[in-house]
Amino acid sequence: MRKIIDKFKSFLSEADYSDYVKGGKITLYHYSKEDQDTIVLDPSFFGQSSYSRSEKNLSSVPRVFFYTNLAQRERYVSSGRQLYRVTIDSKEIYNLKQDPESIINTVRHPVYGMRAGIEYDDLFNEIKKNYLGAYYTSGNIDMVVWFQTITAYKVQEDERRGLEQTN
Image 1 (cartoon, one colour):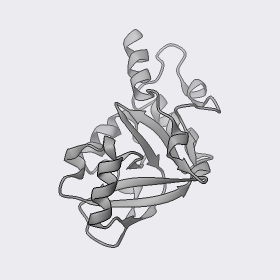
Image 2: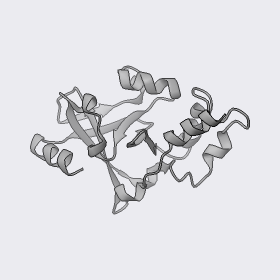
Image 3: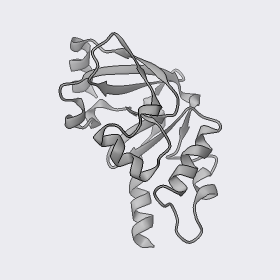
């Protein structure tokens, strides 16, 4: 039981969502092999990359992953890929770190806690009822998962270098 709780705490380690919100908006970053001015990110393709296949073990709810802090990017994800961004109204994203609506307590199993593929699916499905995304930290990475198709805009190379150095 302790191991399950520790794993869950690691899944939701401390980070401050408000640090990323400026004027009610949050900018999110996504790396892609595509090289277009804009790309459409579609959660229905969830599970096709090695990273999302791993995440699919946790929850099969389709989603797109975004970084909130490029200093936390995984080099194997960013290397050889283009950087894209979206700017979203922060109210469309549920802050799972603070869990103000106690959704975790609502879906948590009283004996088994948060099980991969069961309560985590319930968690994301419950969030999807009122929000388009969710903010949390996995390992040491602050991220947002987005549950709907969204258009992202390419960051030009000179700006990208600056963002990756300052974030």
